[in-house]
Length: 359
Image (tube, rainbow, N blue to C red):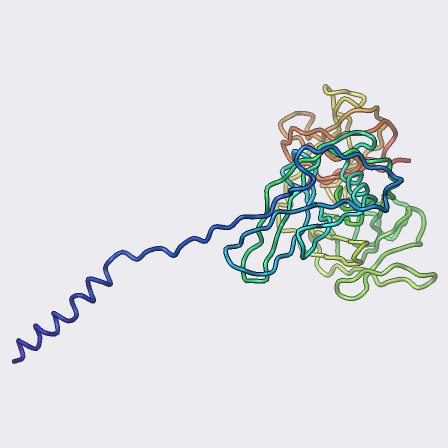
């Protein structure tokens, strides 16, 4: 009887074992389709006029398919043509497939991004859609439009660092390094560099203590009002930090720099069709002893282009596409466009950021 019982048990369990060893089908992949720009259509030519700056442009999106039902939010994003959205500018969002953008605001963003006024330029647009479910956003393909901006009086504010944690000490006119303005957001500033133990603030005008910027709580920024001055930022441990300041949102971040900070260059200079040495000879920049990554020079240039390069050779060079300010990439084939004039030029070899200050 015991043998029979064992045989019955084996006969019962064997199909289960065989079933458990059979291949398990992978879960079905739900196809998803992102939104794309349907209007204006690809290749459309749009000429912006200052007289129409209060009017609105309508950007129409196709309906996305997340594979499940839900409510969508459509965010319109813009970038200079041909940059593969390396720098993205948000133009607004909507819970309907139509995002409205004021012509004046669009023109400001185009000029800030480096498009020449009164000249047609390619601009890429795309939609990033989200759904009220636990699913990742869908980013659509870019659509290129030809847009001619008008001359806009975009006010580009320059900000400078001051304090005993920074290169100039508490001197408001001691070759104070500028914060590097973001080319796509005129209200966003970044300063990556070495800070000593101490404090620092931010000034708007060299040689003047007002207005000055400082802390307002753990993440907010405050500006001086009359004799009332905001508290300084405090550095308790010397090292390299990334400091960001956003005047629009009135916020800041101050975090340790996590990259390699021990790469230094004997020389750095500017070179290009607009410089005195053309494409053959570098014009030397001067290093700040406090921070070996910060370089500056005052140069008179012609209309043309420039790059930054180290050691008077092409082995190490940086390039970018945006005028006035930007972030140059190591080994980039791009050249920085520049208009004739005399500029104080600053370059940070730690993160590639640069800014040209006229006057």
